[in-house]
Length: 168
Image 1 (tube, rainbow, N blue to C red):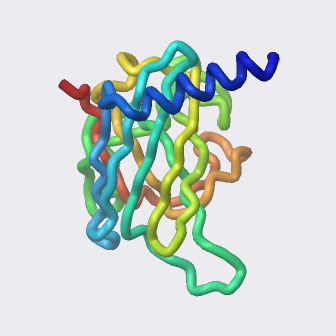
Image 2: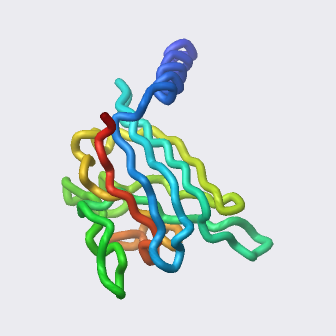
């Protein structure tokens, strides 16, 4: 791809962020991490779906060796409810309409890197279209996704959840 085409694509993606998203999820933490909150925004572009995640009050690391990393996925379920064993069991498993192996599920997304309790991540994906994910859930997990372990990357407990809704 030549430099002009790359610049044109980049400018097109950046301009998409200036518009209202077509869908979004309001993230809320579970009872142990009730302070977690944020928005995940979804923008349809000619190149795929641009996902912009902004999350506040994530658990921080006391380690000198770095910040925490959190698994981040779209799940197939349609609710952020559950029971005492899994407060977000209604989110169900990773969104995986083509029955692919992990990390090739449509709902597998790049991890969130905590920075003093804050995470910001913007990425482009062609694994799903916005219409496919309306009503599904976004989950933040307690551990990083190892991108290997089946079926979910050994990413730990679900600590925050939001239902993806169409923006009007």
